[in-house]
Amino acid sequence: MLGLMQDWPLTVDRIIERAARFAEDSEVVSRRCDGTLARTTYAALHDRARQVSAALRAMGIGNGDRVATLSMNSAEHLEAWYGTMGIGAVLHTLNPRLHPDQIAWIANHASDRVLILDAPFVPIVQQVHDRMPVEHYIVISDDGIVPDNSFGAIAYEDWIAGRGTDAAWGGFDENTACGLCYTSGTTGNPKGVLYSHRSNVLHAMMAVTKDALGVGYQDTVMPVVPMFHANAWALAFAAPMMGARMVLPGFGLDGASLYALFDGERVTISAAVPTLWLGLMDYLKAGNLKLPHLQFVAIGGAALPERVLRAFETEYDVRIGHAWGMTEMSPIGTVCRVPRELADGPFDDQLPHKLRQGVPPFSVEIRTVDDKGDEQVWGEGKSGHLQVRGVAVSKGYFGGEGGDILDSEGWFDTGDLAEIDKHGSVKLTDRAKDVIKSGGEWISSIDLENALLSHPDVANAAAIAMPDPKWGERPMMIVQAEPGASPDADGLRAFLDGRIAKWWMPDEFVFVDAIPLGATGKVNKRALRELYVTQAPASN
Ligand code: AMP
Image (cartoon, rainbow, N blue to C red; front, top):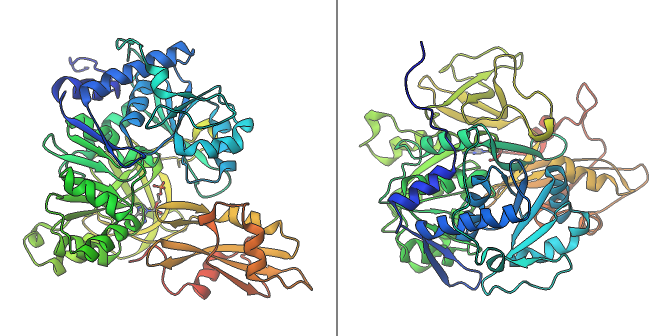
């Protein structure tokens, strides 16, 4: 027997519609490129999102078409986001920190038809537009002026000006795709994670709960984590869902700019990777400043350093939610939890629990398996391959890349190694996947190695992650020279310059006679890590 309840499609356009009705005057504050603040409300943002929809429709964009953004967090980005999703098109967030060649590759893979970009990113597109499939370029700028370009970009404000605010939204299945975000994944090319309306709505409902990010109407939420990182960790949906005020920091991610917003806008909830908080902490310390309004900060994307946790909780009285997740999980997987009996106890007793990645909220299932694939029992202290299932977990990549990514029981292997305690709390122990995460952003070790392998003096190369106090991890390159050749670090650096994004440059080059190979002839990274890394990258 089926229940007799209404069929109410879970589509994200309803999130901003609700915000415009029930939190119509909640502010959305954005930092503009010139440093000044722009203020709008959900009601106005909703109307402008409908204008975006009208402008897209006028270009012939409709269901399933990809509309890309190359944009930092701002009200315009949010409008473009809802305006695209509302008509059943797919909002594809491109990561401006990637090398322009990678951006072009991804735009082609996604078949992006429209690209909405911030003015400071025009030079990136200028380098690669002749290799992009994009038909229309729209530029968001403070003054409405489009910087010189040869790809026919038009100004965002001109694009939406005079359009009606009544474009039709919704009317499609809740499983319709609405967002696309590429991750560098473990092997091969970047892979597209394709979110659906339903998965994003359910994920946002999970994210706002008390034990996850705990967002309510009275909050002022500042996602420092970019919208191009898995929906700003749900906050681009979760904050409007609750009608919370939003503060969007744009390009101002330095300590001084962030502090000005935390303080001036009375931010209560925020989220970002650990590296970013280190910058803010230095600024606070230098000026002997406090954070009286901030109540909760979600920190994830990389292991939380103890000194960040300690400083926030004991010096600034801000509660930290150490979280783990991944793009493929929309992204929230787990959030740390302190056992009830320690809730009122001293910080030092809570510390080990806060440093764990924590327990999954409802709608995420977890388990670990050993190398043979056998499920492990919780609480035995054994580390295994962390696998997940859930309502907002990927079941495949865009375009079928990577093939079948679930096992026969529907589990997705995260590529992380973890130990789960008897209460179901996860602690990451290492990473099986071969990537380096620096400042919360991926460096593909394969791309780095390939770039170096095209040097005539290099016979073999292996990039591994070195723990770094500021960036979490930095790449170290192990190099085996061609017989008779003797490359040096300066020469290799000069060779890589321009071939890779600047921040991918290995911090160190180590020259060895022979790189150790595993049984299948592949480089044995585990052996290299044991030799050169004194501390496991994912540990605290
Ligand atoms: P992304 O898809 O860019 O969000 O990256 C996801 C990956 O980042 C995970 O699979 C982990 O390897 C790593 N990661 C995320 N959160 C944490 C955390 N709290 N501690 C350690 N590593 C993390």
